[in-house]
Structures are given as C-alpha cells and as structure tokens.
Image (cartoon, rainbow, N blue to C red; front, top):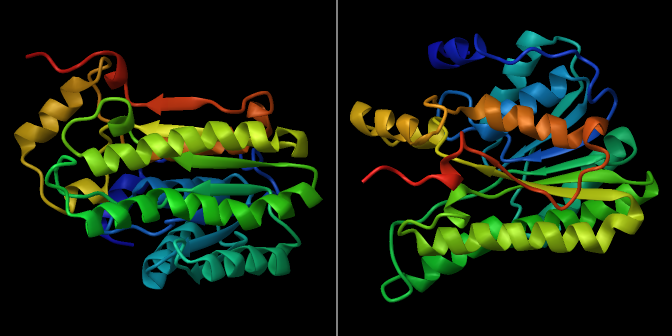
Length: 277
C-alpha cells in the first residue's frame, strides 16, 4: 500500500460488515489509474468490507490486484477475486459473468464504473474516432455487461445494477463527447429500470460531481483549481472516491429496495448552482 493510499484509507467510512453480506458483486473499473482511492477502488473496498463476494474487473490486472491487496490488508478473510476484462468486448463481458457464476453461483450486483474522458471539443471539431471510443467505453460497456448479468440475476429473483454517469451530463462544459456519453448512461439507466423491474432488478445511476480522485490528481492540478472545485460545492467541501463508493453500497443494498430508475447526483449541490462569475 502506497503512502497516498494509506492516507486515504484513514478516511474510510464506517462499515457494519453486513450491509451486503454474501451478495455476489461485479465491479468494473475496480483498479485505479494511479496510486490512491478512486471511485471504483473505493466501491470495491467498501463492498468487500460490507460482506459482499466481489469480482474485481479491470483492463489493467495489476491495478485490480492492488485493490485486492488493500482489501485483504483490511479484511484478511474477504471473498475477492480479480480478472482482466475488456468491457467493450462482448466475449469478455460474457466471460466476466461466467467467472463469477462459476465461482459463487450467480450475480446479485453489477456496478458499472468504467469510463473515460476526451479532450474538450464540440461537434464541429471533435475527432470522430475519439468520439466513437468514448461512446463505446462509457455506454456500450454497460449494455454488454448488463446483457449477461441480467439473466443470472433473474435466476436469483432479482438484483441491483448501478451505473456511473457524471455531472457533465447535467451541466455540459465543453466536453461534448463525454457529456453525450454520460447523458446516454442516464437514459440507459432509466430504460433498463423499466425493462427489468418485472424481473426484480433495480437499476440506478450515480452522478459524481468534481470529486478529487487519482483520475484528477494523476494529471496534475494546481492548488488554486482544486480550491475552486471545492468551493463550487454548496457545502464548501471536497468530494472523494469514498463518497461515490458509499453511495454505491447504499444502492446495492436492501436499504434501497424501493428505489429504481433514480439519477442521484453526488456532488455537494454543484448541479443546482453554477459557479459564481
């Protein structure tokens, strides 16, 4: 565990150890792009600490293994396995679901956390190959993982699917391809909630705001920009990966049994008040 991770682990939310007891969960994007606790890594840790059996999927197997090592350091008897997977590839998505079903007999939770960005551009000047890659990674991936997870959930009389969108879908700011893909995630979530309610499957969407995660700080961020991001929140505090992970735990748990089709911003109120100009 790196110094950065150790510092961030010290701020981990309290857990009961039972909120997801024996639930079988897939988390995509379970690693991290750099040392630290991103959204997927936070969810992975919290799911395991809450008693879930977790399949950690990432395109970078080493990143998934690092997440597993953190989990085991916190809970030596955790039920956690790792897998390298390409969630834009249908065969790989089928293998992901087959792996967890063979290991633990089915699927109860699918946390679709994979996503990428793209340089600022409009429809006039966007590189269309990059545009297609963003749509494929951010939307197609969720379609494919869900395509294979849903039949397994139905065998167990239901389950929970959690998709991750972005505040950029609600308040676009110059990243048109990214905003478009994350808006599609919102529409997909609500359509899936309607399509699969009769199967006992709940589908909800987390909309993260400007949280401070390895995806952000690995690229470098001036302290002044970080402060502006923090102050954009109505609460005047900075969000982090734990905020997103804790929300995922709630939506995965039976505590949210009467919630489906919800688009839940986790952003300190950024979506209802723009920055002061």
